[in-house]
Image (cartoon, rainbow, N blue to C red; front, side, top):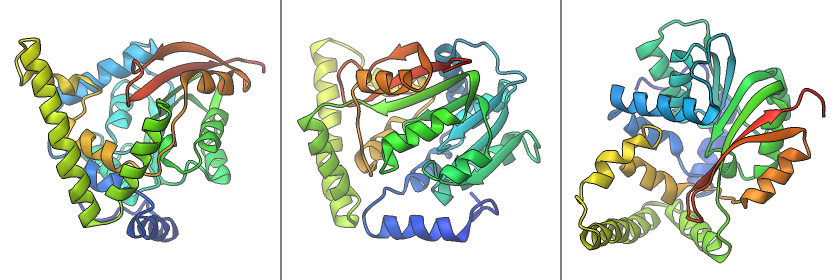
Length: 289
């Protein structure tokens, strides 16, 4: 990936760098830059299947798509391939760079794919982006440090009768609070990162291997099929999960009530079955509140 893009701003980049250096934020963009090295057509295809299935739309032709927290840029790429006019933004300058890199690879100089740096908590910035047919924010707003404010602003960016697709970490009570402490330790510096990674990742590998032995399954199947989860990489998702800080969670009913009070109706719901993962919601905005 080529340096920092022109679409970043010095003020936001400096603010982000300071938070990372103080252990207050995970450097998501660095993880995504590594992910781009393993991105291939098969992963892109799985991401496309996942997006169209949840939205219930075979195509996004003629629609506007706002990617709130674009990360690697994969979902923005898929939306553009499906025919949408795409606006992508992220707070992390390296994530902005990743999204620009995918645009360079697949849609060079495309006027229908705009890539920006911005904060999902900046009301003026969000308002400047206008309203869109589809607003998408998968696993992002719980990392802003002000999740409910981010959810509110994302909802305001949806045009009447448009769709909002958000994924938010499931609230597991005390376990979520423990995970928050581990994530903060991971982000505290090289020693904390090594301690958490060397403890948790071997535990996950061992647990998966034990389950495969008990159920007499191919022990490589889990890793080979993981890419079906939105085209993701298990290795990069592990570090995304361990380092994902700030960290907030919500019960599904809390998210449902929050958006119901703001003129949205639930179209689709995919829960993580009470696990540590994300619950996925697709809402339709009513034409009148």
